[in-house]
Amino acid sequence: MEKLRSPNGIESREVIAHFSLSKLVWGCIGWLAVTVLVTIMAHELIFARPVNDPIKHGMDIWTFAIIGLGLLVLLVLALRKIRLVIANQGEAIWLENGRLVYADRKILDAPLEEIRSVELVRQPIYGTPSPWPPRVTSIVVRLENGREAKLPANGFSENRDDIVASVLTKLRLS
Image (cartoon, rainbow, N blue to C red; front, side, top):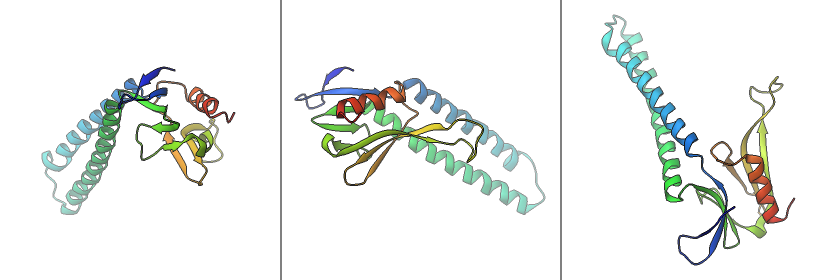
């Protein structure tokens, strides 16, 4: 773990996890590819082919409008993540001034004394029972007041188990 100066230059902070730039870039490339495919399909189905059935034509328009709205929501989420990565210089989780902080402070910015547990949440892939082992979906930080901060577990450079172990070591909860 590296010690860095905080943005205000007064206290040092200890970085626990970084965002994975490659995962972010691949996510954006995937979004772009899906957008291009949907745009081509929309053009072909709505504008290029003459349709005599107005109901089918209307359903095609509604389908692609809903898909387009979903892609717009994904774009907003991706831009928010990119903003977090840039604003925090790639740092995702850190300890600063006796607090555990996630890049999006609305999700987690808690004093170390209030943290009761930190663990990985594993969910079955295709419901229960599943022939596949459960996958890690989030890192959950439980606070004294009963609040749970769920951090997405798939965007870090470091191993998720190492992140949790590091936080537990710093909190002396292990």
